Image 1 (cartoon, rainbow, N blue to C red):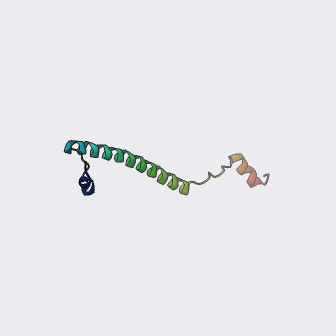
Image 2 (tube, one colour; image 1 turned 135 degrees about the vertical axis):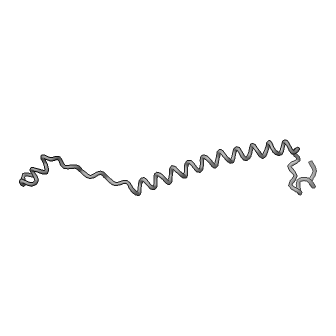
Image 3 (spheres, rainbow, N blue to C red; image 1 turned 120 degrees about the horizontal axis):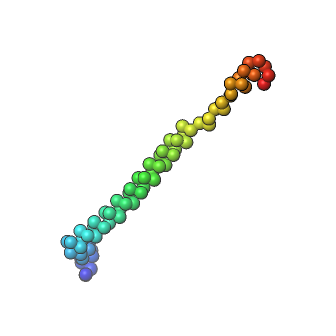
Amino acid sequence: MNIKSNIKGDSSLTDSGFRRCQKFILEKNRIALEELEEHSTMELLKRRYDLNAKTPKRKVSLWKTIKGWLGYV
């Protein structure tokens, strides 16, 4: 490999070697992108849930309701 080929951007690989290298890099990037997409989806769902989450209302039993009407609370 000489300086002229480096300046032109030649990787000094054969066509099949270049394809294998490119395939490896694309596969690695695909896996990283899938992980990133999964993480962003989970963050989006978590944010959406946190915005819509409300504390549950306290339920009053029937007996406490009746006592409240009669003034014995």
